[in-house]
Length: 162
Image 1 (spheres, rainbow, N blue to C red):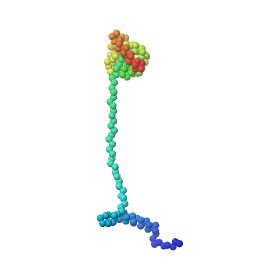
Image 2: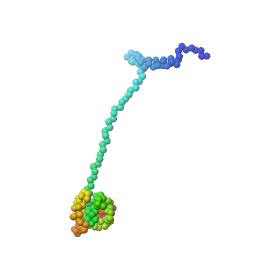
Image 3: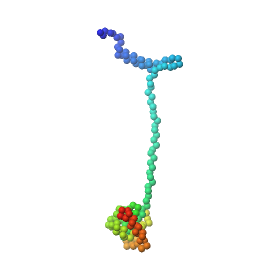
Image 4: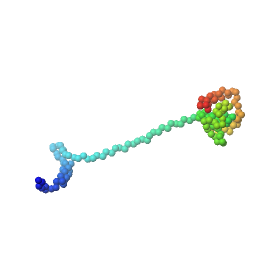
């Protein structure tokens, strides 16, 4: 038996009463002596983090190692051997080339031919005209320089047979 009459609609009333109670409680303050009693709702707090300053990375570049080029010249073949780079430099078709082994002559034949240590440290092409005058293709080593030639052969063989 549901003959009960309600004076107001309970669904709206519940909502309105709940909202009113919430507002009342959020601002409700009471004093008891020197004590303050009340209910307050938390207020959201926004925390802003300070900006982080990052220093740029430090880049350390090692200084390059500079190795002077030293050459041995073989006048019979017009070939230079770079002892620091272990490369042979010579003219090939009118152009200076640098290769691990000379073309047209074996390393053993080259090492058996007369040679002279150069006193320049840059490109042989800069000095080749002067070397041709000073050491022509038929140039022969004097007997006093024989020991130095043997030392150069050993150095070439120690570097992979070149």
